[in-house]
Length: 355
Image 1 (cartoon, rainbow, N blue to C red):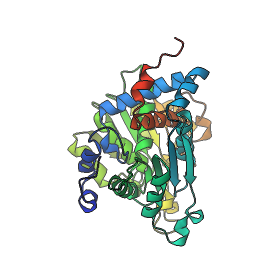
Image 2: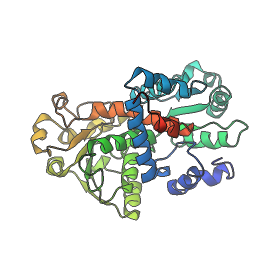
Image 3: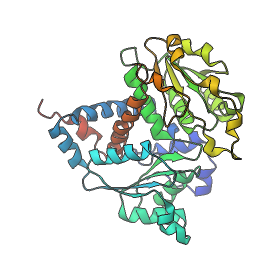
């Protein structure tokens, strides 16, 4: 059992790479950090997700999938607002036949009476077999995973977004989208990925940047206003991993070099004072219809959503705009992840249906 033989203080104070080593012990259980995945993990999850989506196209295949984990229950504990992540996990559970419970407003739970989040999660573990949680509090998923690992009923925790730090399953769906987008172009290796927008506070950028280290000769370019440029810790990780990257504030100059452009919105929910982000002019970091002529014919435009003004709706119908497909990919990769946690990955890969 991961995290059982270590104190919380020791684990909390580790760097993410050292934490990941504990999470890699044995079969996949808790999913907390992008660093716990390897290139092999990513390839296997992508292959499984593609196999699941093919099986689910037929009624018989969908019935097969829905019988796999009908005996399991999942708690979706989303104390931070979410649409896509919440719904894609709901759909992923339904594909596998898992029944779900949810807490999306802590004012309707015993936390209103003063119950700690730790006690709430211990309560959930009494009734459910997996807990998928999203919180504005950085490190909370790690803490809850440690607590449950050292309880009489350890159940897996999936981090569905934790503070400004990590969003590992979003990074998985982003990698899966890149895998599928570049499958006829030799895969992700050798590509140039451009991140644009609020890179300082965007946890999706942080997690995806970390996973891209596992691919050969990938160039990462971070384009943002100086106040929102990527954090030093990410640059340190990339430097230590000998990953090629650069910082820029000239979006139009970078566009022709991109194989994938990863747009992000301004994360003003993290402003230290109201209206802080509004004082930064971000308009020159918006992707508009006129930029399409600068983009390679086989490049892709991505966005974790929701968006504001950073991608014009005129771009939506261009075949290189894959953010709606990217969103749907989240359902498939999260289905693959949950199936793997519960040991059903090989059963799914062995399924032949009526073929």
